[in-house]
Length: 486
Image (cartoon, rainbow, N blue to C red; front, side, top):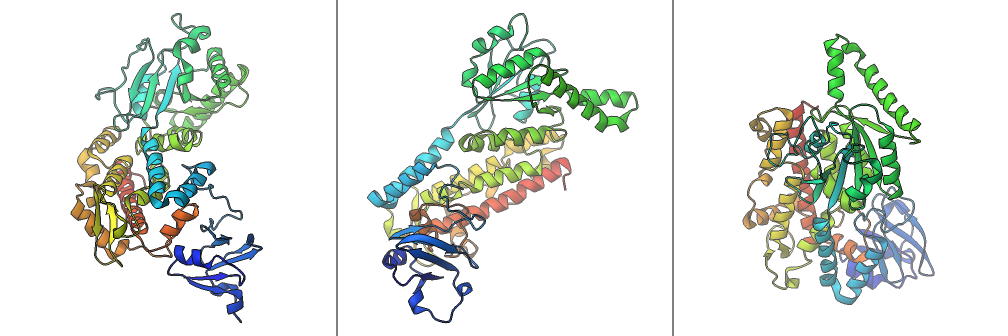
């Protein structure tokens, strides 16, 4: 790696500390060269960033004696928190301060605290609507369950929900669905509904109807809006409407009928005072058809990153795009997992439980917390629906033998991974990191400097990244086998 510095710059010693393998040059030392000859170039004036040139690799900016990480290649402005989705700008500054006062030990503590918060975060989703609209069936579908499965919401033709009933996701109990009693009944009139149901405790609301959206729905939506919360209209039992067309021999009118149903729902809501309503047409028995994927995408885009993380991993893999959403979200936390499980050199290890030095094909001895790496891979497997329980639920939804889906899981990463297996993976040259590895996010200088050197953190990041790629490939093959998706 070569780095071009202005001749008057005084922070070279700090740069060498951060990038020990970099060859540093200054303008005064270089003659007859073009900018393209240097992958990392910066221009400063009075130790302030004046301009940044991109060339065939990332760009590094230096200000005074501070190291600022490579910026996003697609971005024209530097925003250190633009891709650090789990950290606010203030929290990124705290990471930097922690490093300056206590080194990497303090930084790891803060990152571990963030990972713990991700694990402990909860998402509460309220499902409400008229009696018999299919609220319970919808909740089961969102969790990948049938009505006959253990833990499924009770289903009945008449109103079966008399009090708010909580249903936790079978694999991710921090995701909770609440089946609320039907709105507008004699038992629960609209005027008392919000108070009785304690609407403030829910993150967002799904309002379901099996027919026309009445004035009660509009009133309910307006009240939810005053709480500053999101609500979504779902027209359920679309399969029944289309089945009626099939009985009458009018299959060719399917698309036209769906448009008519959507327009009728939107029209009713507009008449009731909702200016720009969006209505999702779904069947809880055909979750890979109609608007279910569009509904999931909308819900994901309207929750904060902490809750997006837990909501995404709870989704059943009924489409390839859901696997891709999960992959993208998992990628955003790899740097945190790599930082807390990898240290720069074995001699820096304090003897923490689960941490071992690994020698082998890579330069020097590496100190890694093998237990944390194993846990991270196991959690990725569950998130991507490759554990036995998730495969069984997906097989039930797809109406396929679970053996058909399991046959598509060919990676050993879904089996038992022990310390020796993890050491072998770390020693494999395929997982060797280098100073040229591409970071997915913009980080404060102390994290970027670690990942730009050949260190345990960089190597564990590469290991986790490759593991994620392999698991995603298997998850996509499972979806294709389940639903015949190409």
